[in-house]
Image (cartoon, rainbow, N blue to C red; front, side, top):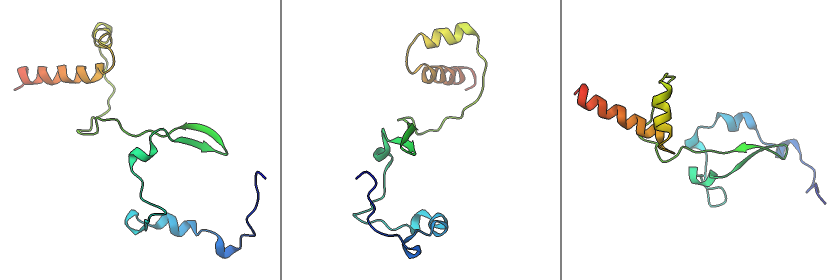
Length: 107
């Protein structure tokens, strides 16, 4: 049976979601049956709605610290092409090149 019932659910058996949503992380009790999760536990997890996969869970990569700030910047096509031609990690190399320029020219 695909959707077999395990019995009748009474109002007393229902979860009080308003109370649950109001709990702070520190108030949630964890035991061996419901341990706290770590980011690694979610690696490769599928996000589903109604049994349909809508995406993959993602965690930040190895470059967590220092955090970088996302901005919109315009560079000449030649500069971008040169850095992109160096392969994966080209944005990190561009960041390092700018830091080197700052050390030499700004102090």
